[in-house]
Length: 125
Image 1 (spheres, one colour):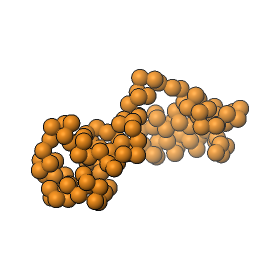
Image 2 (cartoon, helix red, strand yellow):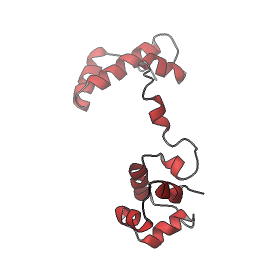
Image 3 (cartoon, helix red, strand yellow):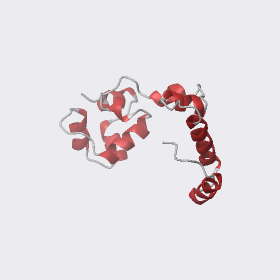
């Protein structure tokens, strides 16, 4: 069962007011809250933005309402991030770190492509 009604009530929002924000009828919202139908993707995105929760939490698939925010205060180096995902081969993580760093510094795709081609880096994936 989803948490739409629970979250709406916890935020003291009337069903009719939320329906208006979502540009749906009150009946449609009621059907979502009762689990008769699921919200369409656009409405689901709006709901997550309105209530600042994840879609998985909203739909009852996770008990963690905002897992990304749990990591905000825990910065991690690119190399450590890559190691978490099994990219440990010597040299490979360093090359990926360099590529990711170039991506973060580039103003646009063209600038990144130019910089990448100048480095003549091998395929690292």
